[in-house]
Image (cartoon, rainbow over all chains, first blue to last red; front, side, top):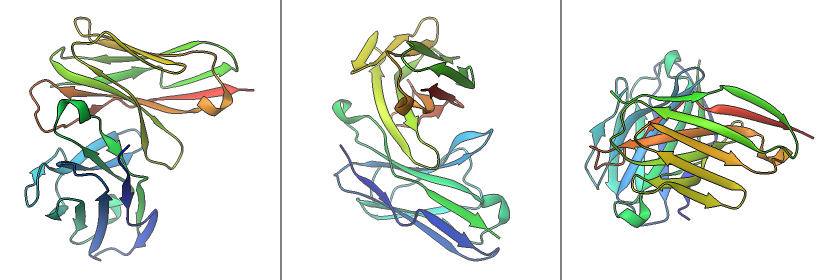
Length: 114
Length: 114
């Protein structure tokens, strides 16, 4: 199985701070995703990337940006954190070939913005 | 627009019971469907993936079925155990998507009582 790691399990930041969430995979998979999960709203896609330096907006990209300089690493950036970005953030990875199109998730980062 | 619904939102059963979790989707044009398990405060663990051309997949005590024409999938859990207590999520990958974007249901939270 693919191993997906996220830089922090819990993070507390203040309003206005710049926040970096990192996701690293140990396989050579092309596709990486960032979701947020909120009670009553489920999982929502923020951004995804299908190759190095490529990015696509998901359903809720406002207030976020991403970076993918290396294939194994996909970063989510909150330029100026706000309280409504308090959430569970989940990274996922997926290969492009039919045998490997399962999505594998990291353990999540619980972000609290005060 | 594809929508995924899981009913019921919560389910409580005694240990040993066989049970079925339901997932429905509004657009039958899907590439595949994936079932996940999520423990409180954790990431998602992939359980089963069914390709659009398949009718079912099995893994241990779990069996997932897919009926594309009616827009339904079920996850059957045999001989439930307290360790099966978790939230179960289904997600569909739209047939038009070649980037792996998943659309999630809200999940069914299962409690198996000893």
